[in-house]
Length: 245
Image (cartoon, rainbow, N blue to C red):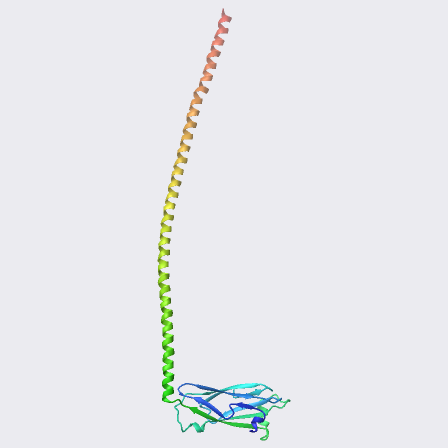
């Protein structure tokens, strides 16, 4: 057991494995577990800092908890002779209860207080057969996705054609309804015109009847005074003649 394993449990404990081809970012995880009852401060270092991106590369692990660290290998041209040059080192130290500045913890740490463990990087380059199998599986997945997409597009096309047919039917129905509304509007206008003409005719007939009634009353009213004048003249003449005689 290394000195670091007294306060931290590493998984994996010896090697970091990366599987090619290395034409894209390859990520592997490193787990750090704190089995102690004290807080532990850690750092992760590498001999090839430009080739790797480590997140997080430092921090604090509480008692009984685990931290997962992502180690991301950047794309590069694989060289079998270079893989032995890549190594990682994990350093750890107990955090004093009275200290809050982590940089001060590392700066003031004594060599006997630091614990570390080294990890090798292992590159697994797939063989030609593995590459062919992966390509075939990728092609099969692509063909399957394409067939699903074609089926979906065919279903969409069918639904679109049905939608077009229904849309045409709706347009024809709308045109028919518009024609009927126009006819009803014309009939309503004709009825309004006929009603207006009838009202005018009724008004004219009533005015004519009123004028004729007034004309028929006027001779009667005019003949009455003349009759009275004649009667008065006869009555006056009768009395005058009787007086003279």
